Length: 98
Image: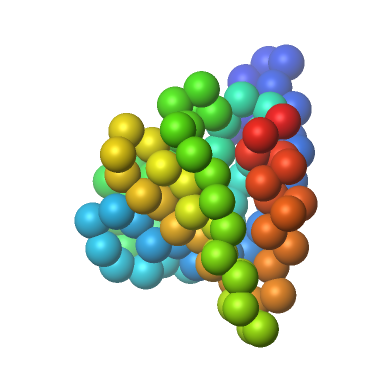
């Protein structure tokens, strides 16, 4: 999963909402060069998983309410959303932009 010289910045249990629809529970992994999502349920395939190079990200924004917080990442005109109750979105944005 990690290449030689690549550093893990964080890992979170989270829900993923892909651009084509659906909802998946799994792990969001952020390294110094990419963002990965690994689906918890292997029987639900997400186009061979998700791997976004940080250099491909056009924008990162947050949407927060009282309980559920969300990170929204735009890549090539497509929106990838990650959501979790009480998620510290500022921390994730910092790691994504790092």
